[in-house]
Figure 1 (cartoon, helix red, strand yellow):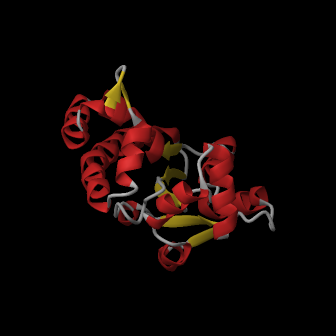
Figure 2 (cartoon, helix red, strand yellow):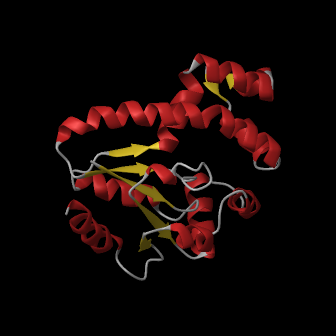
Figure 3 (cartoon, rainbow, N blue to C red):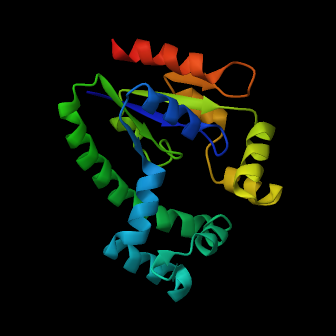
Length: 195
């Protein structure tokens, strides 16, 4: 079974593209969802995160995401330390998930991650799809989706690779500016990847 990486900047539409692949019957692993679950439930991760951010890192047994995000998106060193805690656990989670998918008989699976290149997990993928959209489109989508300010979105974007950096390493691309319909692009890639 081939592993196809799926990535793109915040607000690019990765989750939309992933949901279309799911509707086409493709197994999809979301690193973001796995990371959220691990952050809340993995005891060794919880201990390391609490040590890094203090006792306020968790409220009522759940990660205080707004506090953590407020810190890491203004402090690249803390972001790097947080990623060093979570990424190994997410990689282990993917390996276990992938092992369970092998019996499905599917030609490929999707490994969705906002930071596929930054975390250096793209090397484990046979192909990488980048979902790209104009910066202003991404900013507006994220502001609307998350109910955050333009400045907050810009800080998050500043901590990610640019579309140009991603596209230089990608093997496949989906444009999600709204100019071209996304579904036909995903369906076209699906038939190419099934071969």
